[in-house]
Image 1: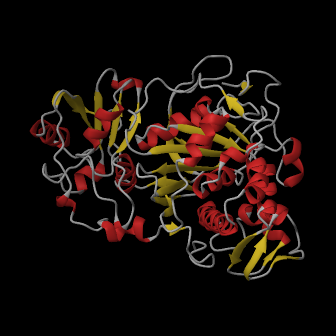
Image 2: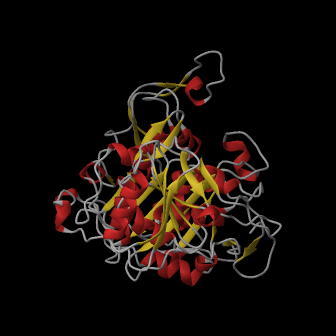
Image 3: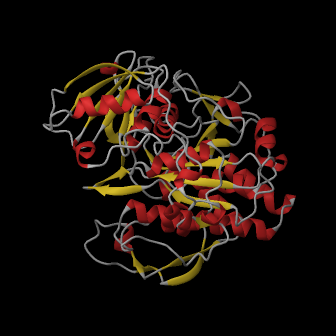
Length: 487
């Protein structure tokens, strides 16, 4: 995994380090803008990373849309070193977006996953060929750092996203922000907006004084270093969180896509943009040739601005970190898996009964544990499972009886069965665990004791997307001054 190869099969390995948060925007912009990759000077300039570390336990593929994982790393080196941020020898991810391109090739949704989100990181391959043990409730951006190499570990991040979402990632891309800087200059600057004045200390909180004015409040156009400063900006706006920065990055991408499309699709305008993006990215082997890039990009040329949506995975604060909110997040992933557009007016607020189907536990073996001091809770959950066709192999009291939340653990190759099981326990966390053996292990928590049991006809593997997700989605044609920060 640590080695990277030229797409031509020749040349030096690891010639450019793929880093930075904000640079992930470059490739995403060119995809959703429908850039004609036929204009690229693809003279051996496409780097690929090894797919040896991609898990063998993957969600099934889809005959409908495609999913592209876009990763930026905040390690700086080479051209990136002078663009800001600390140097380091370990690649770290800072911005991750999962782009779902619908089967009709007329709609696309980009989902941001916060770097501080607490998730389960599955077993991942290290540079020496060994595999790590699964890590539970870990910070999401830690997946990219597994193995502690300057290249980072995109395969581990891909494995983590697939486990989190239940979606198969068709392609993965890592990009640096030197190319991002060149891209914003090549397009002639990007219109952005700020809700208040920004000073030097907002970019560097370690400063003892406020410093000089960097950005004035309101609408303006930025490029190069100023564009990087805008999308990296975290402090001095709203609550100063990474979540707020994600919203501004989404606004920036939307504005950049709009700017590119307004300039027209011709060799004069496209070549500088394509050169900037190609020089900045490392791709999986599935995109590692001119023909593959060309075919993939041209398949998206008909996606218009209004049908290009940006959302953040449902979240809430968990101390200084971020928790993924269930069952809302699972509803989002289910919609993408079913290739359903996230449009409230198109049915996102429809009655859940209208599209839900009962959970079937046929062929699934489950052991149930009571993780609370409430008597009879394991038996109650077992009865619910049996009513839906599950085979309950054991009920017992868990060693830890202080569980606040229900957990559904699964053994190797049983992710889909675990998700089916979790359909009966709203809000349950799903995790891979060696303790589950060759079956599913449900440990019910206080949330199950306090809440109503899921009625068989209301449990669903394909729930409707909460209206708030669709209502809060940003379109690429939205006003860049709207909906910029939390707090």
